Amino acid sequence: MEGHPEVTVIALTRRPTSSGSYGDMLRVALDSGGPIAIWRRDTCPEHDAGDVREETCSGRRFRTAFADKLQQTPIHDLPETIRLLRNRAVAQHRVPADLDCRGTVLLWDDPEQSAQLLAPVVEPRYDDSRGP
Image 1 (cartoon, rainbow, N blue to C red):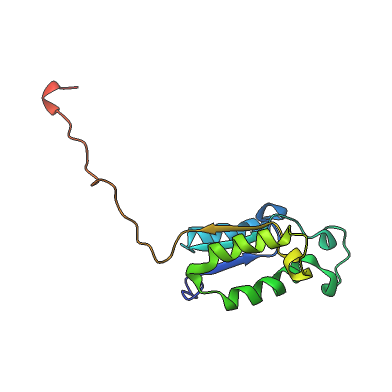
Image 2 (image 1 turned 90 degrees about the vertical axis):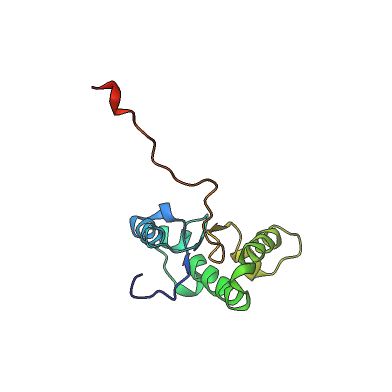
């Protein structure tokens, strides 16, 4: 990720625990300071069953449906967008794209908010006069 500092959102089409490579991708993103990660709670049943037809793959449908939402959403509105997506996915009157986004998980470290110390960090003082 050092070669691509413009990347602020990592989106996985399956939950990170579904395979080692997905877990590794999330770990690299978090260790590199990526502020936003998004994934589905589900695995991809089509891939798990070995029936990998790209047009029916639920991971691909999620990526397509979510990419549209991501491109239309300012980054600071992403938590609210995810909340609305999750609500629409369980609503009675939903469209297929909403259903494809059910179980979306958002890990959010607000990229616009700098870390603020609640108290100064001070090294404790040791009394050397007492000896060992």
